Length: 303
Image (tube, rainbow, N blue to C red; front, top):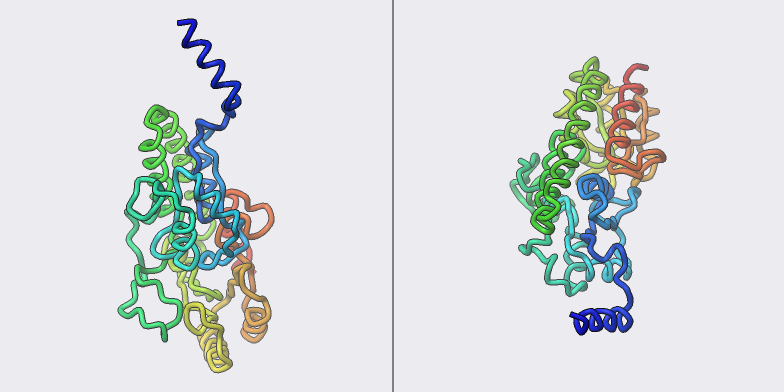
């Protein structure tokens, strides 16, 4: 017994005391909403880093050398799925040399599992722009579908650390209950505007529109990932005038000049809406982000 104790003491001196966070599940998420979900469900048992900060294009988060070392040490990588991160994540995963988090491995957590996509293209010809072959990946802007992501994250945490299952499930259930309560208020706030049409710069909003009874007319982009042409802008302005479309949405990732021009020419209200937490000030959590989006849209449509 004394010999075992001596051995433990020698190993402690040789390698240093284990840091407090050593037992935590190391999670890297692609986007900030997924990081918020993971921290909420994982509590004190997770250490979470997001590759995005909130202001980036979800399809093109700039790759940094530090991301490779983060992913190399990760126990889980949590992603949106539906090919949302195709421009940066596969290369980072390959460079990480981490077998735990590769596609098909338990540490690869695709939050789209269980989500039915919309806008699945009939063709993936590149002439149609930056087409997503598996459908529109922006389902997290629908809080009901975001619940599926939360459940997938919880399942992955439980599989990784089953000894903490009770805590993970308790945290998940408490968060989903909060989200359900918020949904009642969000739907009530937007209910007076059911059927109202709006346009946005990029095709981020079909799931949001469908959930809240709005009508997503289309995008300022000519095609996904393709800047608008003068003819497209003229056509969009004419359509908006004819159909009395009152709202133009600009995501923070895109320049203001063209959306502002369209709003001015049509008499519509221009709003800037985040597509993930951190996209605008005071939206550091998913619920704060959705609060901001709903309040901003409702406020604009009341004018």
